[in-house]
Amino acid sequence: MDSAVFTPQAQYTLEELEARFPPRVLPEGARVTRFGPSPTGFMHIGGLYTSLVSRRLAHQSAGQFYLRIEDTDKKREVEGTVDLILASLATYGLSPDEGEIADGQELGAYGPYRQSERMAIYQSCVRWLLDQGHAYPCFASADELQALRDEQAKRKVQPGYYGSWAIWRDKTEADVAAALAASLPFTIRLRASGLRDERITLPDTIRGDLEFPANQTDVVMLKADGMPTYHLAHVVDDHFMRTTDVVRGNEWLSSYPMHAQMFALFGWAPPRFAHISPIEKQDGGSRRKLSKRHDPEASVGWYMEAGYPRDAVIEYLLNLIDSRFEDWRGENPDVSHEQFQIELEHMSRSGALFDLAKLDSVSREVVGAMSAHEIYDAALVWASEHDPQFAVRFAADPSYSQAILDIERHGERPRKDIVRWSQLPADIGYFFDDSFAELLGEAREAYVALSVCLSDELLCRIAVEYGHSPDMNREQWLEWLRELGLAYGFAPNMKAFKVAPGEFRGHFGDLASALRVILAARRNTPDLYEIMQVLGKERVVGRLSSATGW
RNA sequence: GGCCCCUUCGUCCAGUGGUUAGGACGCGGCCCUUUCACGGCUGAAACACGGGUUCGAAUCCCGUAGGGGUCACCA
Image (cartoon, rainbow, N blue to C red):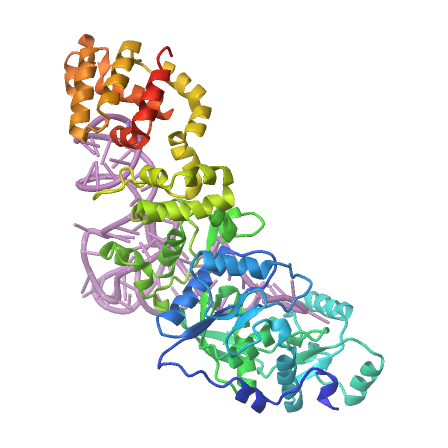
């Protein structure tokens, strides 16, 4: 029977495809890797993780990293996902070199890069398999297949479409012709070449040699709608797109023998495979994959909303990918993480548990190494997207905002209190007059609750004297405030206070606390001197004056 | 259930026959200090279990247990 009946969209011979997609011309050792997401409306953090590994592998070997949209399941497709994926990759600096780079725009000579646009290629390959006798049509209905599985369960044998259970594997041409004449829908299945009890050894870049039973399942390659399954598409695409290293989740480990068999049947050299363990999450006594349904942090969007700096997420992931990264970072504090070379051999075979505290810690370090200017830019991008009101305040006076961010940031030991941009509106809100006004009630409450308050007279003197010389340096400022405090019964330091607590109203810390509450509406702030410098004379004097009478 | 993968402090990892089993995050304590941080010092904390092999095992072998994955016309 003419195989064209089953592959109406086939139009090439294998030789033609080989000629159209020739081996890439790349330096020795260059790796070609890819990310192949399904557009189901979601970008999983695991996708970012896999992309990071793949892209690094390609780039550190002068190779190529491409994006292939695996949209062969039209039922599950969600519109707009490709944009989401592209945006997510771009946000974290993982944009592909090749493939779809913007809606409808492609880069590269190995496309199309959407599987749904590659029907002619898949069907051509399947037609070849059909002609070689490595594939056959199967007209079994869903009900028949279910009945098969029920029977297998009853007899307690291995479920699946294989061996004598593969009812269409050895049908006569007459049976096939009859089914065709009756217009029954069909799929095209692989004629599995694995022998009973045959075992094969397959290499994995992370895990070494792995032993499996040879594949005996006559897996579906072409669905009834003519679309390829993942299995066929993977083999065909990774061959003709000339992928050298497939990096994918370890859920594919069990179908690896099937894929290896398909490469062999086509006569193609398989790429190297690296099966990585997914990021997991503690769930009661056990662990499980981060799930899209239950775990908000499974979504890349969550990190974008929280405003984790791009490099924080990447460095955290790098920690999971290659255990030497942390040491490397310690030895090279000022070098971009791009310089770090990952090695798959160092990847953990077991799944890593997602650790938010660790991410936060990495993020603190990353932000700690950023300049006020860099933070300003990144935080403003975040704010424009996620907190427009704050963005307006923040952008109103860029040099003021940057001065705020620069507090305790210059010098050898910068503050490390910023973890994500989303904390900024609350953390530095008091610097902005409109949001400070909203905090006034809280400030007064906190002030009254203080163990020691300041007399209006003292408050006035502080305001007046500071108004006269706001440009004191830190030492002068400290000395001035200490003396002034002493005149009003505040011990100049803790030591003096502890020696004779009865002789003082409070200590210098109490005085500073009161000023903090008045100026910042909170007790925990960065260095008070710097805050006053940044706020400026007007604000300081104004806020102090309006606190008289509290 | 069959098959496959995995198993060192709470977490992420070092460790590839001989180590007081190391680091980081987190947690506790102390110090520094105008609060909060930062920083420094310090403490508690692990080789899943059972058999072997060996003078010697976290490291090699075999079991057991536990966890995960997979057995779709989803990827």
